[in-house]
Image (cartoon, rainbow, N blue to C red; front, side, top):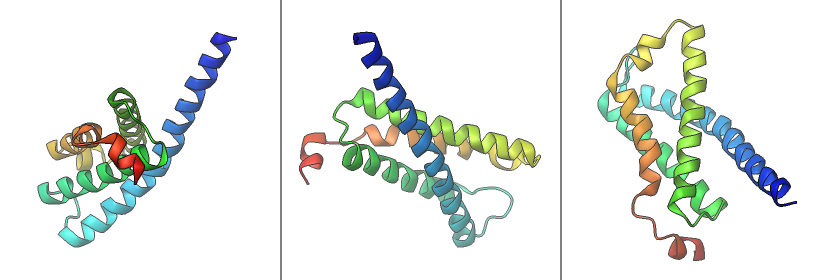
Length: 134
């Protein structure tokens, strides 16, 4: 019975990671489109636009983790933020390979900084007990 409960727990976590990961991928692309209009980049993402994109995505991920899921451990926060970032990365890779545009997004080092910020930012400066009471 304990093994079954553990499997159900892992499956629920994977559903959350993949389901919200796909939703965050859509949000990521919408924000990327808006940033390209604001900062006027057509072929490559510039540094300021990339950092703004990463911070906005990280704040959205942090809100989901803290308010919606009420996660209290840094290990779980890291699992969700890394899981969602991997889903977004994988879907972006599939789309850019299909369109033969991998150099446009992944050829710039700022793209990897965006993903690193998305993984690590939700870990910083969180007082989980205080935030979950709000």
